Length: 509
Image (cartoon, rainbow, N blue to C red; front, side, top):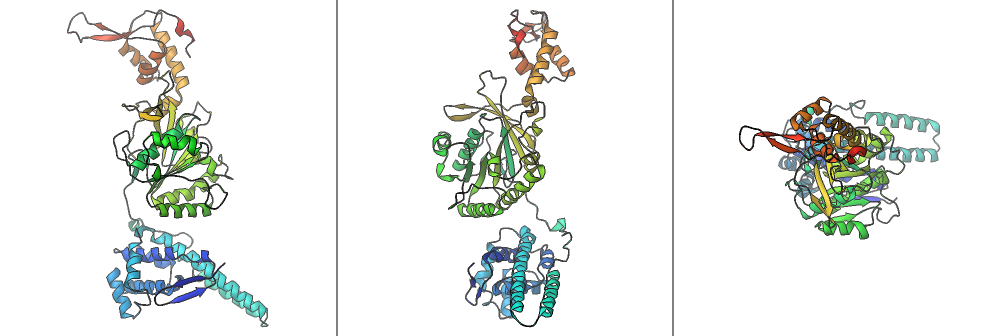
């Protein structure tokens, strides 16, 4: 531990508090929030937490806070000019760091909405310093010859002082909704993947999830457009990938998909340490936050797979997963960065897609958007993949998209996927039922049945039209034919289906 020095044009304070007991950025954020708080929504809750100027460490911050509270008590507005005037009247403007300090504090605070959060941070640091002072005092008393009575009295006063610094509503802090600043949802991919939140991408191993994330990183790094025509925010991407080699696999994929690789960063281990980054470690998250701030334009951080960065966390425990992801979720919100976790599907093929993510439901619960990659079973080659929503409760209902990987490039399909992910992911039992239905209604081979009648009867049995028309028909080799009506124009008539004369389809499903 080394001494901490705070200095300005007017003061210089040296103390032996540990570095972690002082957070000047949090103090500045509180002061800046109160300067921006024209409607005086937050000054009351902040003053409930920070009862006087001595909760702040440097005298500069103490003078500014004291002047702000004085303006508030006088019923005055609070802004930079009024604050400067108040400090001049008290002959404390120089002691407060001057006009430049006040302007810098106000301009470095992006939003007043976090005032209460940072006030609690300042209180926490003040408690740490207070406890440090008490320990030093007890140490001095132990060395003195005044006996245990002085020590007991000192401990009693310490307990009373600690009680006095608790916020007025310590049991449960209530913040009126009228004081909460509203804001619109920002999107990394409009109506699909939100910014400033945690999202999840799941699929079977080897399905192409990692290739898809490389394509997403390429679009963002180059400021391109998503396949639905919407614009992607231009910026940087962090890729934490534990399974694929960057030099042999990831970077070639990025290049082939048109990425600006100077805006994409590999990031697995902490700088100067032989330690893999861990989401559940608050120290690691603080380093990640500082790295985000240094780069400045980070839009997306990919964890592939996310379980590799949750060492020591039971992935099947809902409480452990939610607790471990909580810090990442809050970091995403503070820095307005999309955190995208990659995960596999479990083997429970009879469940809906919502319950197919590997591990605890805590992953899906924490995510605001969950997407799945599966094979398009109507494509016998297996080359077509479907990117479909499982959970997207922040936007309008959007449809899935199809894509293929051709010549090391991801090529999107031109038409949206109508079928829901539940029908796609639980396809085997659905297709089996549909195949048996068609065999029964079209037997014997050669029998002609009107398509409209087939679809109507299928729906009565809970089989969707898309399953019959797009998939089962192809599986059985049915080729519909059009029969014109005896009267009317050439377009008058109906489509009819029939089983082919060949019996090769007997072994299908």
